[in-house]
Length: 541
Image (cartoon, rainbow, N blue to C red):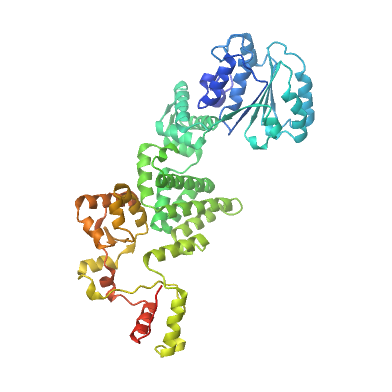
């Protein structure tokens, strides 16, 4: 006997065997038990979710001589005849290849004859959205008032393309995408029947790749079994041509670390191993989506399913990246995927990662606004009018030759408080502050602190933070540092920082005035200082 592929061999024969569609199967079983058979059904949903399977089961159930709790018995002559094709009263039509009005007229003429053996003549029209407008119009009247012995079952993946007049004449059932857990359980059952060993993680990986379609999942499993009787993660990845999870984590780490060299080396390695670049781009996007959901939801696992050890790694990586950075990367991956269809796929992917690892090369409006926002967080801006006023007064006083006046700059300036007003800064503290870089996720930390204590979060209002090695240096009010002297408050602040960054930092104050006394003076700061020394009144905004 010829080999039968798994999705045909293990196609459910009764409603109770259908996986992941209880909203359809239970309703149909109850209606059949009550003797309520509609004249027209519409099954909609994505591919591989069980529409055609349920249509075939329904065609047996409405004609079964010994109905079992709404399921066909599969033993009577009608059930067996429909299964082996000897009963001609169940007709399947592919509307993609029979979409003309002549085909529908022939069907309508045939429907007027009574069934030869069964109780109902059942017409299963698959991909019904492919029918032409004239074919739809020819079907309308018969679909509204068919002969008593006729049942229509329409199937489609694109319900939005159907005419409202068709929808209103059918009892509609929506098939949902099957969850990865349900698909994985079914795959393990099939492997047990086939005497094949499969790892739990491998079954879950196949289910994830199938994207809610049981037929796709069984097709992938069929290919994996052809490669090895022991199905592991590695076998699934090699068969499906997908990238290992470690590569995805490393690529996202390169974005976080702004390491374009590392990203390009990984892409080159995957390209050399014949990995599809479009699929890689799609997988990176899906990985970034998981990070986004972790950053924005308390229970992200309801929207995606991964093994527990991978979930731990995803949480750590999500906490080490900013939400804006993740969403920007998702945007760039989406644009890259669009461009790949019309250009060299490898080059487009490399360009996308270089842009992500070098933000200064991103000239989009969103990127410019993010950089301006980062500057505003660090130092207050002097308005354009204030800069112009200073320049004019300096020219009038002759403090600087006209030809040497600096051009207008967008750099922020700040007036430092007198050095003597700040406490003495040790050499170690000065060294830490000189190496400090702004920590832009500080507002996110404050939101975490607010969950613990609103009073503590209020004390840090208008504060900012800087990272220097293992230190988190905080610039804030005296009240904030007074609260930090309490061990419980300090521990909660550390926990909030860890939840955002995934790192444990030592806390310390940031006293920029004293530490920056020896730094080179900003040109505009020098301009303001000279104006003040000359007795010119300078108004800052």
